[in-house]
Image 1 (cartoon, one colour):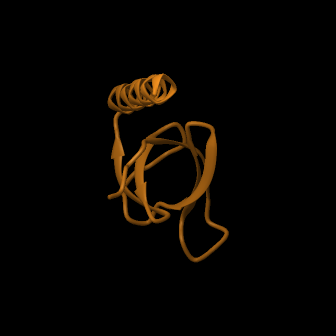
Image 2 (spheres, rainbow, N blue to C red):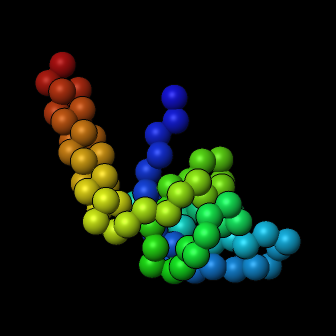
Length: 83
């Protein structure tokens, strides 16, 4: 199963035949192909799979999703530490 985590576009480059972006996924930066989405700009949030952007999402939804994922991680950590 794949988990899509929102990432924030830091910068866009076209050094290759593809439009690529450096995207920050909660502190981890990756190069992601943007040719599959329209109108993505630095500061926008995207969902990516296998190095390719699959959608652009609004900032409020991205922040809410990141918050919920962090809450699930904290919950899992509390459960594991009590075992």
